[in-house]
Length: 178
Image: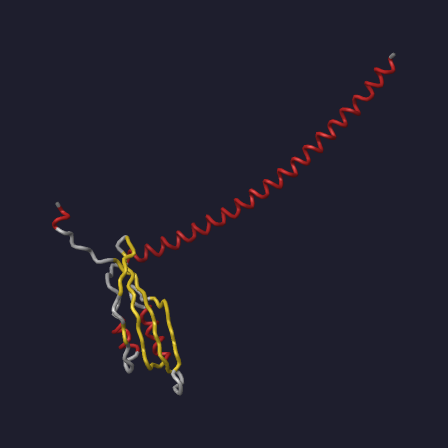
């Protein structure tokens, strides 16, 4: 009768070993699956982190630009007609009326268009360079150049400019002061 107990006792290490093997396999498979899920989460967080860094850099650029604009106390940009006469004294320019649009927070964007019918193209581009040197600068936001037949280096030029300035202080209405 001792033999069956001994056989059972001899089987115990085998059974325990088999249970440990199964538990180890289950743990390994679960760890592999968890690693895959964790890798996916880390990749998503890495993308989110990159996006946040991009936003942080953009905010820093905007803050620096706003600091520069806050130092400017000019409420009107330089006169484009004067710039055109200086850069191209031989060629009359048609300069459109200024269109000003409120940006909010006491800022305005001014838009103007300059057109030349028959101008040396290099001189017309000098107008753009001179306009961008002003404080606040006129920025060239659009340009159309059409060559004139038979005249090398000459053409029709149309340039669109924008400048950003502070809105002039508005006098307070006496009705608003009550």
